[in-house]
Length: 134
Ligand code: SF4
Ligand code: SF4
Image 1 (cartoon, rainbow, N blue to C red):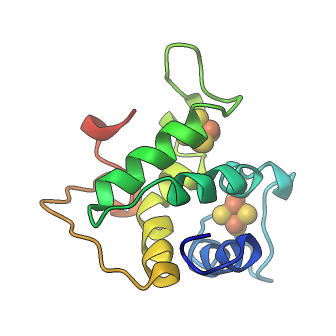
Image 2 (image 1 turned 30 degrees about the horizontal axis):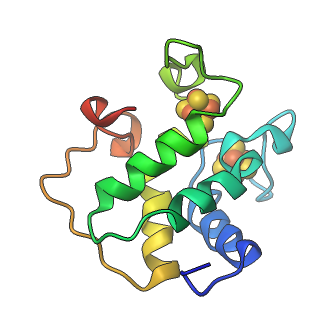
């Protein structure tokens, strides 16, 4: 990857950032989902990484847009009209913690993205702005 990281390394960095604060995490540090493998963020992590790989930009929105296109675009949870019940109910870790995913990408790439007028809102202040949903 142009990040200089393997897929496994990148996933490990993102897991450290996101699972550590995820509301699904249990007191013993494991994932509390009935099926941990169903977490969309990591189930589709190769697509998340591909999205990162497809972008060369200092603008964080370009990375966010690519993640939403590449990942949500092929996720079985997304309806044909582009809506997603999991997203609306804040059940998707990729959506709920997208800003942290991007922070992890910064760590992995050593970049500091421009964040003009970032207006993240929603639960824990971490959800993406509605107007840049794809
Ligand atoms: S739901 Fe996903 S992000 Fe949250 S603890 Fe489980 S694997 Fe990590
Ligand atoms: S927001 Fe919905 S469509 Fe996108 S990855 Fe999460 S569950 Fe899938």
